[in-house]
Image (tube, rainbow, N blue to C red):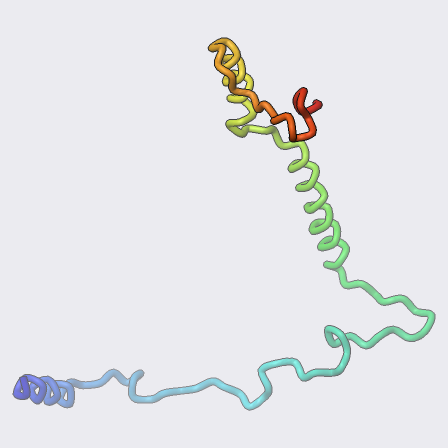
Length: 120
């Protein structure tokens, strides 16, 4: 094992190195890589008294797209068809159980407050 390591090491020193590996360049500047804090929200100064804030060109599009998309999603979710197994299986199961004649509905006890059954 030791002889093999020394053989590999000697091969590495003899092999020529590409020129790009010999020189390492760094393109880093000395400036800060973040926006210096100004004390204002999002770095915007508040407008003077009696003036309105000027919106950026992308803001109305973003508001309409975001809030309009949320409203469209809420409407679509409200009117989504019910595809659950309970929806299509319950009437068929109740019909089969009623035809079998076995008692399957819940019968409350006399002490439950609903001795004649739960009102619908």
